[in-house]
Image 1 (tube, rainbow, N blue to C red):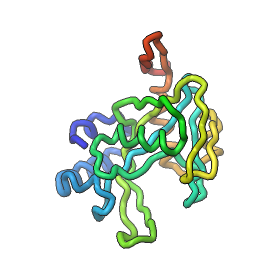
Image 2: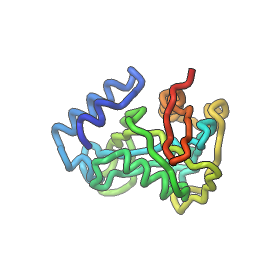
Image 3: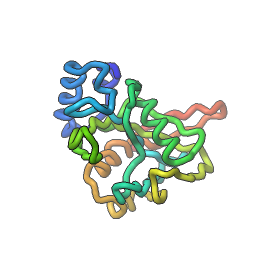
Length: 191
């Protein structure tokens, strides 16, 4: 991931320390930061999947964690974190034709423990808005026990993690779309 793409992320001012920490780790570890075995942490990309009208958010019931979360996963060597977020959203929701909006809207550092040789480590999660096509049908995969659409107003009752709510607050102003006949999505800021 280029420094520039992280620097251009439109994030909540409270996340500036996380952005600075990821930039510091990027300077220290370089390309290795995209490898899931890098300690003390490594890059992940996640997606706040919204419907084509920007009115609902898709949540997945994570199979291992048994919590409603946004799709996302390890970079696995890919430094294009917008592409990582799109890949993970497509795999985990089964929705074809998703589109990722850039720049990122949130940066989050959180501890995880996959109960493997790496032990507890950090996920350096760069988060994007991903837009579902009109009429999208979610099918999921083995990583989720279920998928469900919720409105922005329902989201606080659906999730128990402040980081997801912050992500939604950061993303919501950018989730008003104009769709053109040639398939282009123009993002317009909510008034």
